[in-house]
Image (cartoon, rainbow, N blue to C red; front, side, top):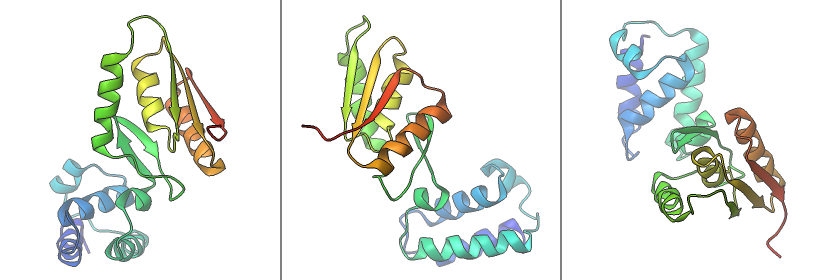
Length: 169
Protein backbone atom coordinates (compact mmCIF):
# COMPACT_ATOMS: atom_id res chain seq x y z
CA UNK A 1 0.00 0.00 0.00
CA UNK A 2 1.33 3.47 -0.85
CA UNK A 3 0.91 6.81 0.93
CA UNK A 4 -1.99 8.00 -1.27
CA UNK A 5 -3.95 4.77 -0.90
CA UNK A 6 -3.48 4.73 2.88
CA UNK A 7 -4.56 8.38 3.15
CA UNK A 8 -7.76 7.72 1.17
CA UNK A 9 -8.65 4.73 3.33
CA UNK A 10 -7.79 6.49 6.58
CA UNK A 11 -9.83 9.57 5.68
CA UNK A 12 -12.86 7.40 4.93
CA UNK A 13 -12.46 5.64 8.30
CA UNK A 14 -12.11 8.90 10.24
CA UNK A 15 -15.34 10.56 9.12
CA UNK A 16 -16.49 10.92 12.74
CA UNK A 17 -13.48 13.16 13.41
CA UNK A 18 -13.74 16.94 13.09
CA UNK A 19 -10.80 16.88 10.68
CA UNK A 20 -10.43 13.45 9.05
CA UNK A 21 -7.96 14.56 6.36
CA UNK A 22 -5.68 16.42 8.76
CA UNK A 23 -5.80 13.58 11.30
CA UNK A 24 -4.78 11.06 8.64
CA UNK A 25 -1.99 13.32 7.36
CA UNK A 26 -0.60 13.88 10.86
CA UNK A 27 -0.53 10.15 11.57
CA UNK A 28 1.19 9.42 8.26
CA UNK A 29 3.73 12.21 8.88
CA UNK A 30 4.39 10.86 12.36
CA UNK A 31 4.95 7.26 11.28
CA UNK A 32 6.98 7.99 8.14
CA UNK A 33 8.95 10.96 9.45
CA UNK A 34 8.09 12.83 6.25
CA UNK A 35 6.49 16.26 5.99
CA UNK A 36 3.11 16.94 4.43
CA UNK A 37 4.58 18.38 1.23
CA UNK A 38 6.85 15.38 0.75
CA UNK A 39 3.97 12.98 1.33
CA UNK A 40 1.77 14.78 -1.20
CA UNK A 41 4.59 15.01 -3.77
CA UNK A 42 5.61 11.36 -3.43
CA UNK A 43 2.27 9.74 -2.71
CA UNK A 44 3.17 6.60 -4.64
CA UNK A 45 5.84 5.73 -2.05
CA UNK A 46 5.07 2.31 -0.57
CA UNK A 47 4.61 1.86 3.16
CA UNK A 48 6.65 -0.83 4.86
CA UNK A 49 4.87 -3.62 6.70
CA UNK A 50 6.01 -2.12 10.01
CA UNK A 51 4.63 1.31 9.03
CA UNK A 52 1.32 -0.23 7.98
CA UNK A 53 1.02 -2.05 11.29
CA UNK A 54 1.83 1.08 13.29
CA UNK A 55 -0.62 3.14 11.25
CA UNK A 56 -3.36 0.54 11.74
CA UNK A 57 -2.88 0.72 15.51
CA UNK A 58 -2.86 4.53 15.56
CA UNK A 59 -5.87 4.75 13.25
CA UNK A 60 -7.84 2.41 15.50
CA UNK A 61 -6.97 4.47 18.57
CA UNK A 62 -7.98 7.69 16.77
CA UNK A 63 -11.29 6.12 15.72
CA UNK A 64 -11.96 5.47 19.41
CA UNK A 65 -11.53 9.20 20.07
CA UNK A 66 -7.99 9.32 21.42
CA UNK A 67 -6.54 12.79 20.73
CA UNK A 68 -3.97 13.10 17.96
CA UNK A 69 -1.56 14.76 20.40
CA UNK A 70 -1.66 11.69 22.64
CA UNK A 71 -1.06 9.44 19.65
CA UNK A 72 2.01 11.37 18.50
CA UNK A 73 3.14 12.52 21.95
CA UNK A 74 3.69 16.07 20.68
CA UNK A 75 1.66 19.27 20.37
CA UNK A 76 2.85 22.61 19.07
CA UNK A 77 2.13 25.63 21.24
CA UNK A 78 3.42 29.13 20.51
CA UNK A 79 5.59 27.54 17.79
CA UNK A 80 7.22 25.36 20.46
CA UNK A 81 7.02 21.57 20.01
CA UNK A 82 5.89 20.25 23.40
CA UNK A 83 5.80 16.68 24.59
CA UNK A 84 2.35 15.75 25.91
CA UNK A 85 0.89 12.83 27.81
CA UNK A 86 -2.42 11.81 29.35
CA UNK A 87 -1.05 13.15 32.67
CA UNK A 88 -1.79 16.74 31.59
CA UNK A 89 -4.23 18.70 29.51
CA UNK A 90 -3.23 19.15 25.87
CA UNK A 91 -2.22 22.76 25.18
CA UNK A 92 -4.89 24.45 23.09
CA UNK A 93 -4.39 27.10 20.43
CA UNK A 94 -6.86 29.44 22.15
CA UNK A 95 -4.62 29.45 25.24
CA UNK A 96 -2.04 31.27 23.13
CA UNK A 97 -4.27 34.35 23.60
CA UNK A 98 -3.38 34.19 27.28
CA UNK A 99 0.33 34.29 26.38
CA UNK A 100 -0.30 37.28 24.09
CA UNK A 101 -2.14 39.13 26.85
CA UNK A 102 0.51 38.35 29.44
CA UNK A 103 3.29 39.55 27.14
CA UNK A 104 1.38 42.77 26.45
CA UNK A 105 0.99 43.44 30.18
CA UNK A 106 4.46 42.51 31.41
CA UNK A 107 6.79 45.40 32.21
CA UNK A 108 9.58 46.03 29.73
CA UNK A 109 12.14 45.54 32.49
CA UNK A 110 13.13 42.10 33.85
CA UNK A 111 10.44 40.62 36.07
CA UNK A 112 9.29 37.41 37.72
CA UNK A 113 6.39 35.35 36.39
CA UNK A 114 4.45 32.62 38.20
CA UNK A 115 2.50 29.90 36.38
CA UNK A 116 0.30 27.82 38.70
CA UNK A 117 -0.94 24.47 37.41
CA UNK A 118 1.66 24.43 34.65
CA UNK A 119 0.91 20.98 33.20
CA UNK A 120 3.12 20.61 30.13
CA UNK A 121 4.69 23.98 30.90
CA UNK A 122 3.21 25.48 27.73
CA UNK A 123 2.40 28.94 29.09
CA UNK A 124 5.52 29.21 31.24
CA UNK A 125 7.79 28.05 28.42
CA UNK A 126 6.17 30.35 25.87
CA UNK A 127 6.62 33.34 28.19
CA UNK A 128 10.17 32.31 29.09
CA UNK A 129 11.08 31.93 25.41
CA UNK A 130 9.73 35.39 24.60
CA UNK A 131 11.19 37.06 27.67
CA UNK A 132 14.62 35.54 28.42
CA UNK A 133 15.25 38.50 30.76
CA UNK A 134 12.45 37.33 33.08
CA UNK A 135 12.54 34.57 35.68
CA UNK A 136 9.60 32.19 35.27
CA UNK A 137 8.48 29.82 38.02
CA UNK A 138 6.10 27.04 37.00
CA UNK A 139 4.30 25.00 39.66
CA UNK A 140 2.25 21.83 39.50
CA UNK A 141 1.29 19.40 42.24
CA UNK A 142 1.34 16.32 40.00
CA UNK A 143 4.75 14.60 39.70
CA UNK A 144 4.04 13.43 36.13
CA UNK A 145 3.17 16.97 35.05
CA UNK A 146 6.33 18.36 36.67
CA UNK A 147 8.45 15.73 34.92
CA UNK A 148 6.80 16.52 31.59
CA UNK A 149 7.29 20.28 31.98
CA UNK A 150 10.94 19.69 32.93
CA UNK A 151 11.40 17.47 29.88
CA UNK A 152 9.92 20.18 27.66
CA UNK A 153 12.13 22.88 29.17
CA UNK A 154 15.24 20.74 28.69
CA UNK A 155 14.28 19.77 25.13
CA UNK A 156 13.72 23.42 24.21
CA UNK A 157 16.85 24.54 26.10
CA UNK A 158 14.87 27.21 27.94
CA UNK A 159 16.91 28.03 31.02
CA UNK A 160 15.02 30.90 32.64
CA UNK A 161 12.18 28.71 33.90
CA UNK A 162 12.16 26.85 37.22
CA UNK A 163 9.65 24.02 37.53
CA UNK A 164 8.55 22.98 41.00
CA UNK A 165 6.29 20.32 42.44
CA UNK A 166 4.04 21.87 45.05
CA UNK A 167 0.45 22.70 45.77
CA UNK A 168 -0.62 26.33 45.87
CA UNK A 169 -0.83 26.66 49.62
